[in-house]
Length: 111
Length: 122
Image 1: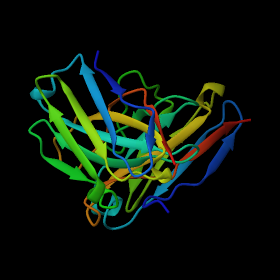
Image 2 (image 1 turned 60 degrees about the vertical axis):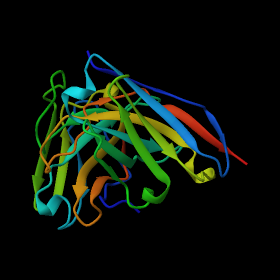
Image 3 (image 1 turned 180 degrees about the vertical axis):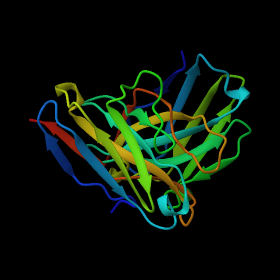
């Protein structure tokens, strides 16, 4: 059971917008620790997609956006493309565990 | 361009010690930042193992702390992972990664190695 809760799967048609939620608690996201998002394509290492709740590293399309409210965070992907089909993970820090925590991951399927 | 590369045995016997090294190029680890290990069992999610600062301060996942040691060798620009008393549940792809932020509020990993599969056999 992951400390951060994500839906196991989401799907959308090309061009649509999808969101992936990440629910934490008062000892991690709710405490103010930053949330980060990773994209993992099949057979590849995770790639940093969003850092510091809502910032995109250089080279990440602006179709990807992040937000945070209270003890939850969300990743939104607009203008869905076939190449976006991947697993997505949220990550933060937990003060009770004194360590880095990941969500269980969400598989995005582009219909 | 910063690059990380994991190396080590792909097969380890149960009850023995798993040892991996992460070589870093394109950045001098003595310059700063923290460096971490993350693993992913086949078909499952990511699990943080632990991290080490450029000054060799370590912090570990509490669930693995008793079996894990992370060390750093700035002269070779690399850092290492040891997991003792391994069992089948330690079978996973092991990734090394860089944590660029010095803020205690932010623990993202911006550069990752390609990962190496370690299988624990009985």
